[in-house]
Image: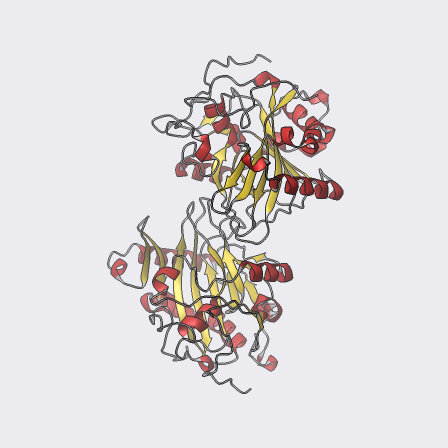
Amino acid sequence: MTLADSRIDRYPTRTPSPQAMLDRLDPTVWGEPESGALESLASFESDGYAIIDELLTTAEVADFSAEIDRLASDPELRLDERVIVEKKSNRVRSIFEVHRISPMVADLVHDPRVIELARHVLGSDVYIHQSRVNYMPGFEGTGFYWHSDFETWHAEDGMPAPRAVSLSIALTDNYPFNGSLMLMPGSHRTFVPCQGATPTDYYRESLQEQWIGVPSHEHITEMAEKCGIAQFTGARGSALLFDSNIMHGSASNITPFPRSNIFLVFNSVENELVAPYSAPASRPTYIAAREFDPVR
Amino acid sequence: MTLADSRIDRYPTRTPSPQAMLDRLDPTVWGEPESGALESLASFESDGYAIIDELLTTAEVADFSAEIDRLASDPELRLDERVIVEKKSNRVRSIFEVHRISPMVADLVHDPRVIELARHVLGSDVYIHQSRVNYMPGFEGTGFYWHSDFETWHAEDGMPAPRAVSLSIALTDNYPFNGSLMLMPGSHRTFVPCQGATPTDYYRESLQEQWIGVPSHEHITEMAEKCGIAQFTGARGSALLFDSNIMHGSASNITPFPRSNIFLVFNSVENELVAPYSAPASRPTYIAAREFDPVR
């Protein structure tokens, strides 16, 4: 396989005028078939995601839940820039780079149940591009509009190709009605460019609400009609592995049932970040790592 | 059956301080069993709702969709106070008293498939307490927080008892993810009082967003743990019949799939409105009818 020249922007986005959608220029599953296909990933290439039931045992879910509760209530950690606190409620919403904050999460990254999924899909050694825990409260979970993570990582972080994969491990039950992730199956095969230049330090706001890097209603309608919409529902302990370029989003959560998850993004060591393709400066390294040492 | 004295407020709400939840003091299904049970209503008494598949044929759905599109694009009708227009988008969101505006909807009210459901549940002649069409756009459907309709109709309209039933007829497909109604099965057996006095002319705002007549997080959590949450999903043409006191709400809709429905509220002629129990004045009659002539 010949690697593309990362100096060439093969996925232009954040342009002044609307652009047409592009066919994906890269594979989805980079691992060679003979490297041993994982049964749980049978539909990953066509759908762009796979659900892994019971990735964690009940006991592990309890342990990780206790750990993330501990992190959220640590008064010293609240002063850390990697901890995102919702102003209105003063509640912790996310903790970034959590694999460097919590030894338990650090161990999880190395767990063969986790790392082998990423290695198989990306066909190489991998490193952590981003990690976080998300705390979505009941009643007031605000949801997130449709987007491709790769669109952001390419534009704002300088990720050359969609050779990254995310693992969302549910620590609470996902129902269809408590703001669970919605995905458009197969949408990872299309790159949906967004209009508008990225403002300076945009990440400070975009973690709360995004208005740049947002696909047009026309593109979302076309994609939804072509792909349909699926939802990641399932018991705590299950996990969703999804391609970096899949179109996804979530509705609000007015139920009393909160949602928490551990979110790990693996990037291929052959897909190291360069300068951002469409942003004035790189985001902080706790949002987009710039050390590319493989997870061993 | 002895009717309760409507001068006594048996369901106090909008009180200055929080009140405990009350057991329902009235039956759910008022019709005598020998009057012929409707198969589709088997679970109505225990759940407080029933889904009627294919209440309308495909051809009827198409006809009603054309009719409500016609209403929404009628420039003269836009000046009518019964037509609620969303300020931001200038789009029609609801049309009240639609059975007096559209002859097609007027006919639907008399249709035996519709009226017999209401007569059976309420065990008497019935009249239309409220009718409307709702137009929920894709992408920006805002959802509605948990509430009991009866709580509002009792407090603001002077409806003595929860002897009313609503029929929501879907004109678009209801998915789990496009803001479809969520209900708490069995919650109709509990009256959840709300705290806070009703402001004058509150209906002008409460049709957009409600902050009075809103149950507490504690009550909603207790009800959700006891009852669980169900969703009304199904193809266009299906309908949801639900008790006036059932706890229900909806999440936002970020999908491109809009939702439209015809919403008919039937009240028993033995449950005529009196003065509001907890509001300074009655709401307009296009929101809460004060002519009690039975539908024949």
